Amino acid sequence: MRRKNNEGQWGNATDLDLDEALRERLRRRRAGGQSRFITDGEYATPLAQWLETNPSDALLVINNAHLTSLTTWIRIFRHLGLRVPSDDHIREMIRNASTRYMDLQEEKYSETQTAYYSASSSLLESLTEHYEPYNQNLWKLLGTPAWW
Image (cartoon, rainbow, N blue to C red; front, side, top):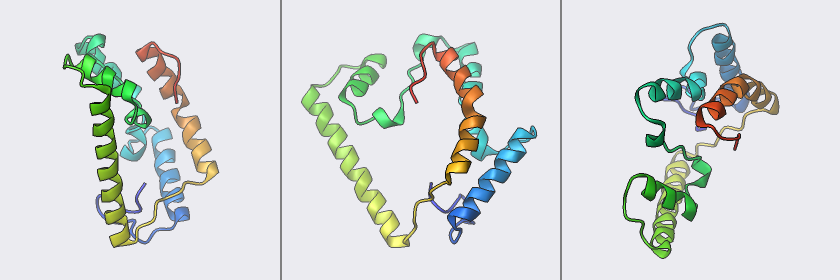
């Protein structure tokens, strides 16, 4: 997570400042309020709404960590009904996209000297606990065992 939100208010925040800000948003959400920082990770709710009006076979869920996998891209092309390029072509696409992404990240963060935020282990535990029932609902909706 970058140290700056859309309004730019986190530019000089420490990891402790950001931990406390996220804890406050988590407390607000647990009290029944809304916090986009928290609700954006509650995937099952909008997915259930989507599945009410769309067939489940129109859905393909991809874990971001697998976007550099040849197998994932073959599944994407097939799901979209597109001709699947050769394995070598897909590997080249992945390599080019990864290189471009890393170059952009290096350029962006070296210019601003912006560090990545590292959440504390206690905050990560609280977030994991919060998201557990949402994740269980997600796996149930997807009809698959948990994979993160």
